[in-house]
Length: 274
Length: 174
Image (tube, rainbow over all chains, first blue to last red; front, side, top):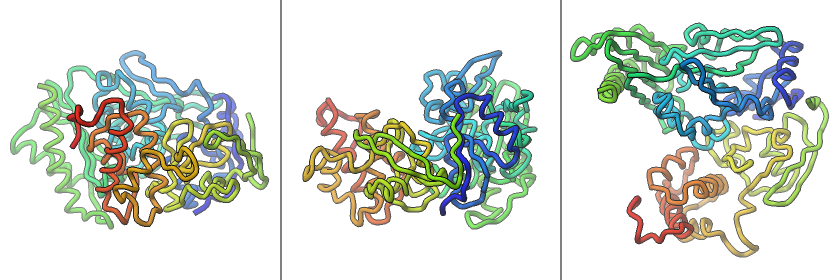
């Protein structure tokens, strides 16, 4: 339960961090809040040769509004975003989802971008990014690119990030005219979700996303269904997610949670919208 | 930029409970081990070593921090507070610690240091907490002795004692 040996780089600027990633490639990993990655180091599930600590780079600790979206820098801790006074107005789904993310003791250190970089299939922030159709801003020493959420997460804890890239920021579209709902079921509040559901309801339709079941968060867009039609859509989605049995829950139980929690979350979002 | 090489020990200095402390650590050394083995501050306990149990929670620059998910080299120059810093004087307990004793909010005491540090940080930012807020905060800790109820009582009573408004005038908790 102790990490294997690594060099530690305390980067003072983004350029310094990117230079190390450029030189070391897959042997280097970014350390931000460390609330997922340090556990992986302790269990030696990750054994990088170099760790690049980016939390002393003041320029990454920014929340900006630009072109209809909120851009959250790689240094922004989850607790800071949760305490941001415009959060409920600009990103109501994130305001609903963040209290489910870990515990107060991990949100105080963990970053928004770090959770998305980790891409755990049951984590709330990657699910919210998929539900809202956000984007990930990747940067290497040579270039910047912006990857849509759906293209960024490629599978269980795997992403489109190249070895010489890091997440500079993530962006979420600012809410307009939608109602939102979020809920999850876990063994203990703050633990990994057995099933997590996010919904956005607008005049013409429903967007519904599920985490914790497939190897990455999945979303569907439906027209404004209700009654039996909504049950049928949820049931079809529950089967499409190809749930598996594990020590926490059976596939059947997960499908049932998608149907039941999903319905209540969509109803909650519809009430919010009305 | 400073690069600390893997196989060597490097000087780490920070403030611990108001006093400057320093020692040497390899980059991979966890803050839990640095506090306990290098500094000798064994009040911070080591439970699960992957951030789940909360026994090692300390305050770093006012943030609740799992010391087992923190490298010693990460806290260079930071302001740390641990359970050793809570008591106002030798032989005297803080308001929160005294409430824990009155309510039997600990039995074996293994989880207590971490819970006290979480509550100490939380109550400074939230001087009039509700029971629901305390329960939510405690979801980040595991206690196998108490069943949590005495901890919640102790926390609410300590908050009431510390808060500017007397308990009788407040209606936001049981």
